[in-house]
Length: 142
Image (cartoon, rainbow, N blue to C red):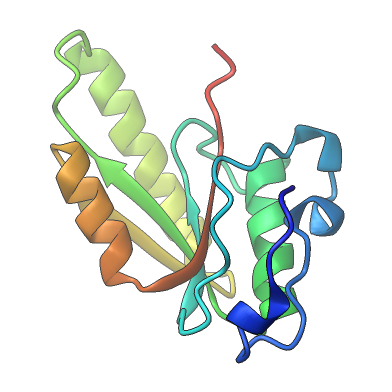
């Protein structure tokens, strides 16, 4: 992970290295070299392809980062109809799975957001509205 000038983030006394915090550091790939947002109000786990709470290395990494920064963890999922190949059966499976996750989320110590986001700009605005210190996401295995 790229190093960051500690003086640039004075409100966070120690910037934990996400790779070192992860329970599976070999699976962490930093997507940019930006510093954590020192005014961030949470750590966001942007759930995309790993729609589960158990055995989810990206979620575990985001939770570890949130704990290290003493910030709440927010799980965010952007729902979209922009994928024209999705059959009604697949869409129903996804929505049923999200409903199950919502029930499980009610029993866990994080905030769960499912938002309709059709365009990339809407996804970015939805995530930015949460004012995260950092965003951790999963990657498609394909």
